[in-house]
Image (spheres, rainbow, N blue to C red):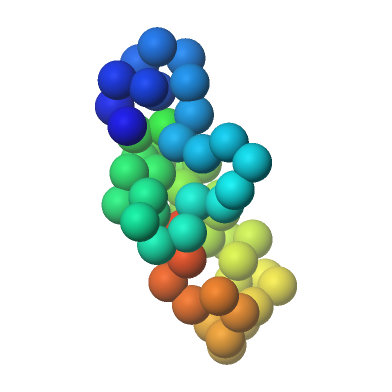
Amino acid sequence: FKAAVDLGGTLSGEHGIGLSKAEFMPLAFSAAEMELFRAIKRAFDPKGILNPGKMGL
């Protein structure tokens, strides 16, 4: 995954990040972006019941 991101690619194409790629999210996104994702997730899913554990959030 690191090589793909280093070459300008992404972790995922037409499918989501899911469980298998969640730990690699920081390779493609900054700490600030990861926190933004978490904040959005908290805003829309404060109880954490929608897709728990997906995207490493």
